[in-house]
Image 1: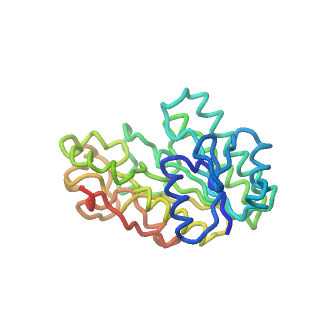
Image 2: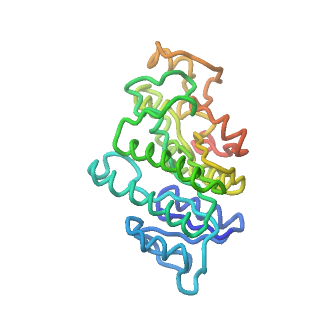
Image 3: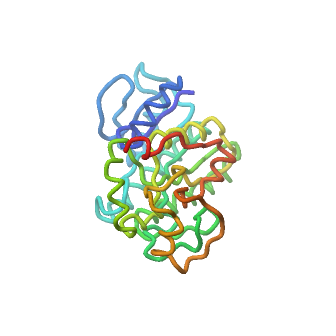
Length: 281
């Protein structure tokens, strides 16, 4: 496959590009900013014409795309105004999805977000471990856009039955150099309660992207993507009793096992995290 990766200069995007290239794929990185080079194209994704043109051909660099990994976005709430976040992210995603379908590209993997589960958990989750079974609960404009993007995907696969469109609800993306801070979380269980003490190593995030591209499950599917462990060394039972004492427990978990269930991604994508912050600290 020749794969376009939008948002290729971002925290996750840089690792996705590296890992896909290491796996033998031809990757065309696309972003508004980034290092110039043969494998990079500068694109403003809020401009539909630029997206169509970049997906169709870029000089002698490529003459068409087989699959799209869509990561480009203002990556979190609070970075820009709510209105700017909404207008940028919804337009960019519509343009990417629509350009891909117009051009006959039928394999799309898109970054959704753990925030659609109701983050930050100032209002506790309906149950623990959290999974994809309950309806989205957006608590920010950023999260609202992610919900709307997923809904857009539902309709697009209805219109295009041969389309595979997979949304990966990534947890908080981390690089190995971020792990030095993790031991400090143990002193205050509330510091990371906002996402049930979860994270995703960018390398394992890239693994999930590659698995989704290769599986190419028809229709729309969404998956929680987190690492297999929490950011804490304190046991889960202790953390839940302290922070979420009234939240129903609906499944078993180990002392430091993720409280964001990744069972669906394991079963349908073959996703299995290979990295842990505990290997670096």
